[in-house]
Length: 128
Image (cartoon, rainbow, N blue to C red; front, side, top):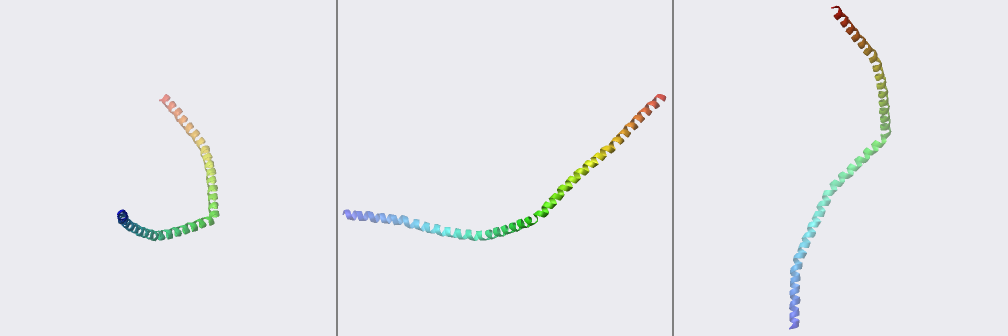
């Protein structure tokens, strides 16, 4: 009787184990299938993006090579622009000096003219 009871407990344990493991294995199988589909979809989505990235990197490399080839021309251009800026600065200084030199006689003349008008106005008022 003890053996029959032990066999019954073992049989009941096996039934419970099977009842739990079968759904778990089915869920695991569904999860693995979904994961496989996800990986395939991701791989299919990444291939075009990686192709475009490779093309973009090639274009950037070509632009960098072209810029490196033109580096001497760019350096020459920037040097010429710097020289032009210095020349404009010097010319501005020369023109500023000429304007100041031309302003002084004009200011003196305006002062003399105003003084003469004032004096003439005073003389005219005294006579009048």
